[in-house]
Amino acid sequence: MKSFSFKVDPITGEEYYEVYVTGQRLLNNPCLNKGHAFQRDERHELELGGLLAHGVASLEAQTQTCLEHYRRKSDDLERYIYLMELLNRNETLFYALLLRNLEEMIPIVYTPTVGQACLQMSHILRRARGIYIHPDNIDHIHEIFDSVTLPDLRLIVVTDGERILGLGDLGSDGMGISIGKVGLYVAAGCLHPACCMPMCIDVGTNNERLLNDPFYMGYRKPRLTGAAYDEFIEKFVLAVKRAFPHALLQWEDFAKHHAFDLLERYRDRILSFNDDIQGTGATALAALVSGARIRGLRMRDMKVVMCGFGEAGRGISDNIRTMMEEEGLTDAEARSRIFPVDKQGLLMADDPTLEPQQRPFAHPRSDVEGWTLQNPDRIDLVDVVQNAKPDVLIGVTAQRGLFTEGILRQMSSHCDRPIILPLSNPTSKVECTPEEANLATDGRFLMATGSPFPPIQTANGMQGIAQSNNLFIFPGVGLGAIVSGAPKVTDRMFAAGSQALAGMVGAADLKAGWMLPQMKDIREASVQVALAVAKEARDSGLGRRIDDEGLETIVRKAQWTPHYLPYRLDPCGGRH
Image (cartoon, rainbow, N blue to C red; front, side, top):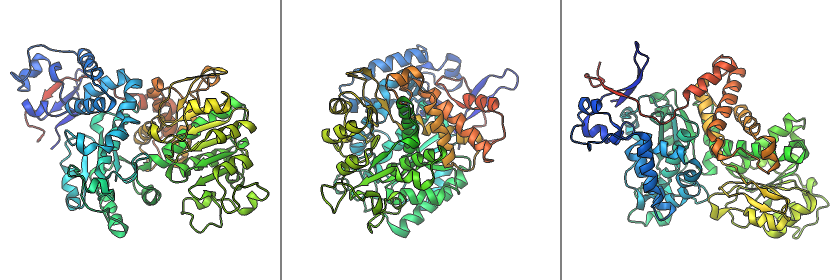
């Protein structure tokens, strides 16, 4: 049974919640709880008398008190635990606090601290949040979904925990990622929290540390594989379509051997996308478009080395190729300017060990004829940088220090301002830091990173370090797809969002080295990305036929700002 409904008074136009729970059940519902902000008439009507102290607090006062509590915590993990406790107690207050301190708290509720939290999730978990589907309850999934008390579920972020950030298989402890991503959808994309749900597909884990941990709370068996895994996912998707037909499903942190398959299998069957593939690619492309503007080039003029060719590497390369083709290159010409490097070195077309997602970007042997190599049997990253002379070096390898001083110096020897994108998370996995790039290139570099870094003093003055955070893309893509009524998310929607994001970076910021908007502008970035996505959906015949002004009105109206609405008790308890 639903716990409340969104309502508008037909006479006064007042927005309010019609609630179907009272007393302690109301206070225990994080979506409805206002704490001491319940007004005196509400306390009487909703049977809260005696359950609260006499005083009535404002949301602003509550936020200030919580900020004091937060800043007393001794380390980032304790701050994360505090914020999750607040989220589980009062969602409106949590988001009010987060939005008032966005730049300070985003690194706590998401990268890099969320990685540390996921590593210890079973040990720090106070209260389960979201929905866990595992082999013991998959046959009851319809009843589980029918028991959801939210009034209108429109967004689901789901992970199977097999590839959490750069940390690997964390089983059900990876739920922290789904929770964090939902939080970012609300904070940045401004979806109402009652429309969003984190989920975990817990099909076991192959992580021996977790299997031997007596406190691990997940399904304590090896992972399902093959047909059993495929059948499990199919049941899950069919149940989502039946119970939440208008919801967008975001696949999150699946291992690459599942991620590409799931994206292709379901992208036309259900409104869905994979942020690790598509969101990462679109965000990185926006940074590169800005970098090209700073250097006075077009994307088609640049050569790119892509280190790590799983989900993120393929997604970024697809976006770069698409942009180069839009600027006039053929498909073959665009691919020839992208140099994919993975564990076997430069990917070569005659290598029988290539994975399916790697083959389209592998190079023929003719492309490397005449190259000077350290080892004729293997073309390493240093060989690629020395011989291809790229403008751009991107890393999604989770290998700390992969971009050595020698490689960075080589980049700056043939390029006046090399563009360096060490995108791995968390910070402990980054391929190089801004300080290392600054020293190796004598300050002649442009950089966007996966984790946040402060601006750095270079020989040319203070330079901004953009955070190539998917947060700039996925909330807007999700919001745009939902409000447009599109039945699926296309690659062109991501491309449109990417160009809209790059277009937000003004001349002054470009001059200071910023290649993406700054975090303080994240909500407006989501608006612009959502608008671009909704327009592309409309123009491609997939979305609602509404003019640009009408779409902007809908997008901005869909954005929720934390505030307390009045409550009215439905005497029928929602049963009419």
